[in-house]
Length: 393
Image 1 (tube, rainbow, N blue to C red):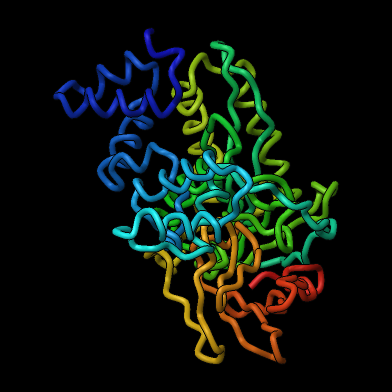
Image 2: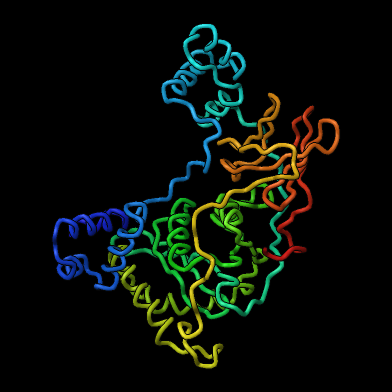
């Protein structure tokens, strides 16, 4: 088939395009080598979310703190190349002098542009504490806790790799998702979870390991953009202790069954492999009794969450002095000062409260995260609110 070397996204788009052109779904499924169940699932996702269902969810910040017209951004880049030793203040002055007709960007905005284009000399990053995991709950209600992981990658017949992203409900063992992806990149995980939240509602908490994209060892408290998004949605985070996969034991046990049933041998293409995953999901949830469930089937115990996904809720800080939006490059800009906070909060609002002269507290939602002082711009993290002393929300 001419699509064997294309990605799964390309195959899905071609499948939908030909269906919209009037071709019969039965004929298309036969040609693509997939079942009608998988074919109808692709069409249903397109009807629900359009092309966004098949593309990486946009990773632009939720709010653009430093948005500039393209021409102005390009001017800043060109000036930096002309004057490579100049920083943001000198470049801004040059714009003011030679281009008076342009709206003058802030120094922090000029710096953010330079940072986005790799034109800022990076300072040595401060080492962050090793990730240690959090307390783990043992919740008995469906959707109180979801477990998530990637089943180890494997190769198709066409020499491409597959990284299955799996999600289960802890209490009922219901297999919510097994989605074959081309990588573990954060953008692809966003797309999958957004679709799951639309279809099944929001869980109370999500348990993961400490790997990408669920955590980031070099970020504040090991948070990633994905886990910050979960927190904004009111989803608590649980992390197993590094090197202890048994703490997510029932999910790992499902992985063994999944591997035996769907990867020996693997399919030839990503879509055909997804077809095998869909068959396994149906069997695992609706046909296979589980001894741990007293020989009941997961589908007999699982019901979708009553917490509907309606996008990001507003966040406010009525007891703080200021609310600021973290810039694209992870900075807090306050009274002409730029304080590097964390890029995983880019586009999110944080609350600032002055606690002493030139000393400010930074809060995200209900979590007090760090202090910084205006004189040195140094950020001092507080005790990890997501560490082993604190359960997920």
